[in-house]
Image (cartoon, rainbow, N blue to C red; front, side, top):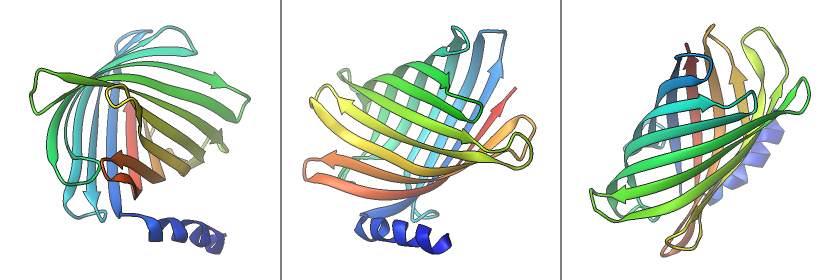
Amino acid sequence: MRLLCWLTLCPLLLRAEGVQGWYQHTVWLRLDERWSVGNFADLRADDGVGDVHTWIVSPRVRYDLDATWQLQANLSALETLNADETVRSDWLRLEFEVNPTFRLNDALTLSFRDRVEWRWRDGGDEYTTRIRVRPQLDWTLRREGLFRGLYANNEVFFDFTQERVTENRLTPLGLTLRPWENGELRCFYLRRTTRGPDGWRDYDGFGVSTAFNY
């Protein structure tokens, strides 16, 4: 099994422009049956522990329409490099999401994160708009214990200003762990493809994501 995973990932790593470590943390506080407030923080470092590539801080508000549909609004402040990694910029984003979750059976759950972003760069007055669509399949293998299951997703970015797809993020394999009563830990491999003036560039990411719900 280890040999098969290595043979699968090794060719991808050889073709990548770089490797990043992704470290994400989310906290949600439920106010009542429908409203929740939270915050998302993200840090991405070159070579896992090298120079900071991107940081994001994003307070959030969520409203549960029912067991299937959620609405969410975020305000994200971030600093990141452009697609060709030649210019570092500050961004402010206003984000709105419509996110459905469908339980296919006792083990499989299909969910979507459908987001619209209005993006201001370096404090300018003009903004750009893009959408992001991410279907995700969660496979629950255990209801108790540390290891809970696997998941996979793919996210597509479409920029309305450029009128084209500008990025794709594929997570072919992720692990879901439950080391805390109110928290979840996810470990994942990510294949990130970005489109800049000089064409497409591929990056590999290995990350951990923690989420706490109170």
